[in-house]
Image (tube, rainbow, N blue to C red; front, side, top):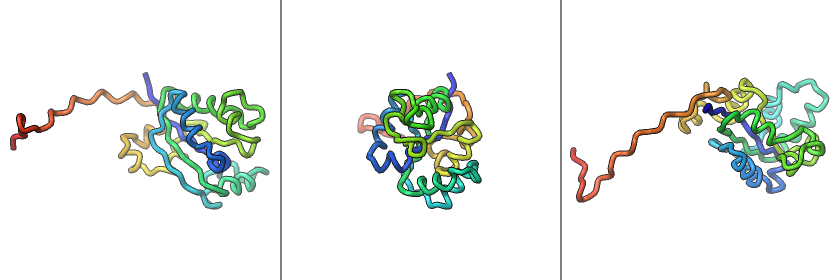
Length: 173
């Protein structure tokens, strides 16, 4: 079995409605595990940088205004086929057309205020996760930045811990 990582984001509309923990619960119930979580508020410039792939499109200014309008929650998710699995859980970009039970259908309003974002490729996972989490932060969590967005084998089980020192079993120095 191979593990994959992806980036998820709860957008300002869902955060302001108090839906963040319901969304995280739905993510966890789907079998994806949040392994890094950060709440922050993007400046207009940060939103432009994050969504630079859409620069020049007619919705870019509205998107970056919206994404800098309130707090967001960024998450790194871990699980089997995490990228496609989370994209399926999100549903269609237009919340009004999203399948029943998807995050966007349950928590979004329309095509622009659609509650959540998810990376669409391993390359974008690395770029987007790196936007919110440093390599050092991820390494502390046991996640290699090279593994973000990539499929990696699960870690081997760790060795059993040494017995704790007790009066009957003192640690010898």
